[in-house]
Length: 200
Image (tube, rainbow, N blue to C red; front, side, top):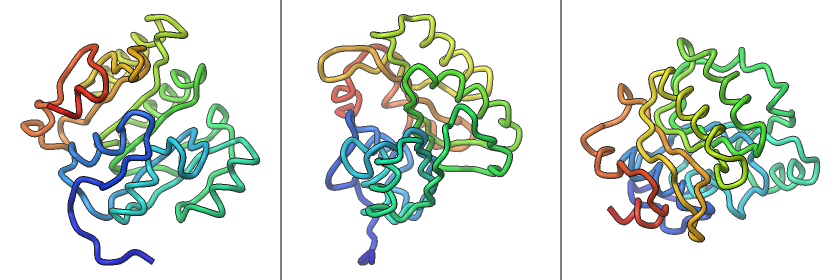
């Protein structure tokens, strides 16, 4: 049971690279938000949505295909568990505004994003963190993801987000119509390590 909720920077980040804190800062400590976590994996370790759920009362859908992770998610998380391969998912039931999309599906990320963005007239996200793994797959996949986001009306606020080890592996974007862009602009960057972005 959640205690009294307070708008604040989440006290502990569980994300690999502060994605949960980035969302919290962009949305100015929003309580009771919503998320779609595709490639949710472990319910707590390296989770982009666990802190948002546990500290700020967020709810959402956790999409995962690995049977072991699905069982752990059912034990530890309150969100709806969608045990499907996101590459084959039908997103037709999703509509409206979701506060945060976390998308981390390795080599399938770009295609899954394309499928989601086909519904951009019906489904919007305030903040998105999308794995590009440019250090593994090269700049072409990253460029495809960034262009798809731009063409769908999103602003890739943080391009070429780097891991602690300096590897380019994510793009962080916002819908400029759905967030306070004056607040968001302070995080704009290209090629910074995630810790440098959050320190702005």
